[in-house]
Length: 95
Length: 255
Image (cartoon, rainbow over all chains, first blue to last red; front, top):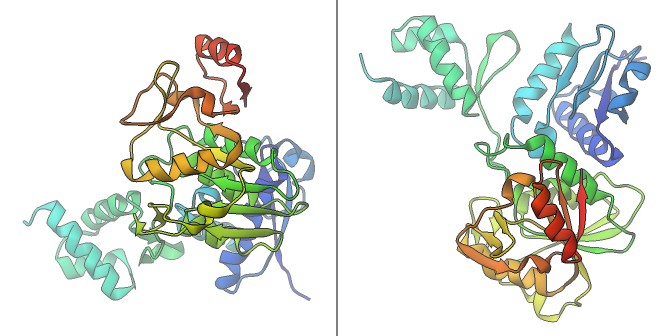
């Protein structure tokens, strides 16, 4: 059994965006030997789905997350700042 | 005391050599306080040259420069992503989609790589985008040949593909300037020929441009506004432009 960390990946409308973001996060963390479980949703669904997740990563603003940390970033789309964001994610997951 | 610019250069070299280090090590090496180094590191970090990792470790950033210019990437980025997301919804199964040069179009292509329920082709001059889309099974990726410049883009479009291809592509196009009288204009002369060719083989031309581009005129003329069959922009569009665009029979979507 593993205690894989869970990340909720949210985007505005198109589910395609969160697919790209989730894939990138898994790929980057995988290269560092960290396995995570990602789930995708729309930003508006975050408050109702967030329970049980360790982190929310969103390309757009999200509502209340009940204490679950949120990383608001577009780096996984633009390609700029990915490394710094991965460090942040690792920091959040380590807590 | 040596000037800051010079020290920054030496600092960066030092970090490159050590690959990973700490504020304390660097302060010792340069005989300055950790507060001074911290300030310098912050500047280098803002420029995306170094990374401060968990636990205060400082690393040289291996990140390659992207197709998105970091100095421009924050400009209207939320709008650009919304526009790009909308473009994604216009993809049909079996489409041949040309992704023209530009930040918004690059983002559209990137987000398209997240489409999993359709098979289509992407034709691009961006090396970075091609690497991304070619890793996805349902997308066939075709890269346009020519000389590489700017580290990530093939600029010249010296491509056999266009010589014999069909004329039924969907083009996701951007322009640096959009004006009612002067039409679509761009900054970069090297891209002009390529972009004109892209337009000439496309039956659908989707102009993906945030509202800041409207009312501007740049150096090189790509064609009249009517080159675009649809325009996707944000809600900041000037109402006069909106009226005129619609009166010319161009489909307009504000996201």
